[in-house]
Length: 202
Image (cartoon, rainbow, N blue to C red; front, top):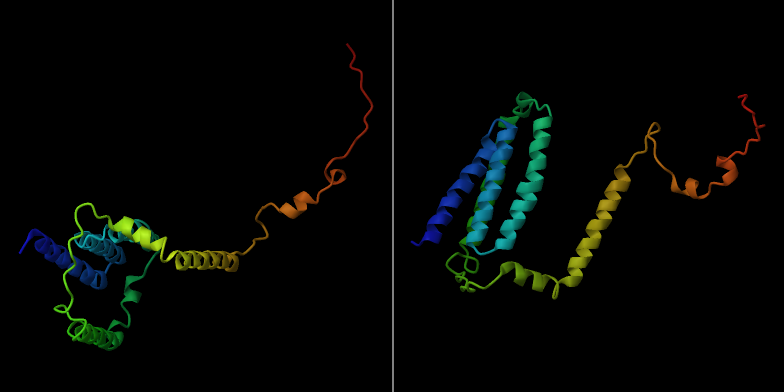
């Protein structure tokens, strides 16, 4: 076994332990930290597969943004741990049944005739000068440029709609109204006052 295989099993073991601790940790902060460890280890496995773009995105987006936000939210909220544990045993049979069904599906897919591990060929060595990010960007901005732009427009519309739906104006808040500022006249803001001049005695 070469060094890449040893590193894969090492990171895979850490990933499995971290994923198990995410769902078994009693403290939500510890569960979030274990999830950060799981994402970091998964990015290391992506690097072993020479998919550096996916590894960097996983670290920047999930570890650097999403999980840090989750961690701060969990730390700021006053979570009642006893209430979270209520009803665990009542939902355990359903959760175990769903987990067993997923395991059976994965075994059927990976052990099948067309999608088995033995049926998948090993990827060829692209060479030292190969850049996964460059190849992905070339395909994304040439063959899939229109679906990419369409997805960007859909996400932009979703962001604008979410802001419009959640925006609530407060009566005591002070904000500017551009139409009123444009339609203002000089007589509404400026008043000419005629005052007699006063002579100061020396």
